[in-house]
Length: 351
Image 1: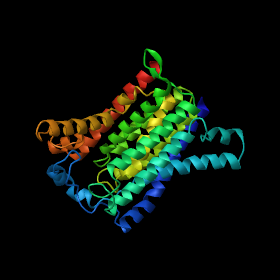
Image 2: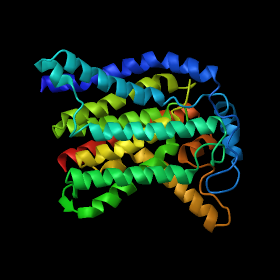
Image 3: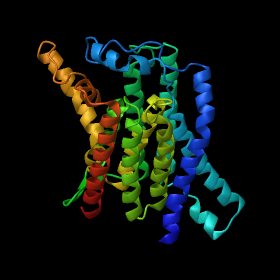
Image 4: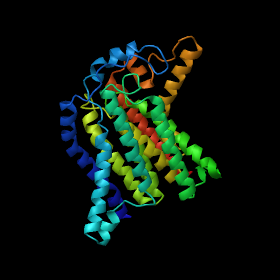
């Protein structure tokens, strides 16, 4: 047990310090090339203008670089490779134990993290160059959704055909056998988490929320004795904390799609590997609330002749619009993220 604890915490701390060292290099590059949006978004996803959002964020949107999420996935990748290389060069019991790169537990979430991050990076580049089919430049939403669906299809098939996963655990009730239905369920879960990526809208918000979520799954995986997977989740949390160090108000850069797409797609894999899929809406409640606020707003505008439920959607911008300061919104989301992560862990571990 003690070596397992060290195995989790040491790589997580390493990822944090790797991210901290990467930040000045990335910062210099992003500011040198002015890799930020050149104009504020003026059209809402569900149609209509965005005057309140534009007023709240006009200065930040066009002066703060995107692609800060690079810190997260690069620090995760470098940390994973570092411990694997050390284990290969210095073969002994300790280094072998600390190596958490394993085919059964970490290959798939790491692969998904990288693919999602690189697709997100392409979208970020298109946005800052104002190219593509998106409202303010970038990859068209339909194309991004298509990529997520394809990733979900491949991941779901891998779970069903290669790993033999055909059931999910229902807390306090037991396992429910789904057979091939596990594939579309995997796809829907990944798509739902992708939609929650819009939480990356205020300094420090997404970083704090995602750190709490991955930390919760690290604990769940640890108590399931999936130690390598627990390490992976802890390393992601460590890399995200490094990003958060530079993203707290005033943000040096935003996480953007290269961070959120990588994190949400790999989180889907983690949830299925731990079997804790049905507690995901609890642990990731801030993402759920954010997505629902967007859906409610769009439905209301289309069925009630343009009338809105929220002053601005997603929900965190609504709180800004009613007078909450951005730091207050962020820190209250952090508090709720920790609370819901704790509740989700309890349900997952005793259910």
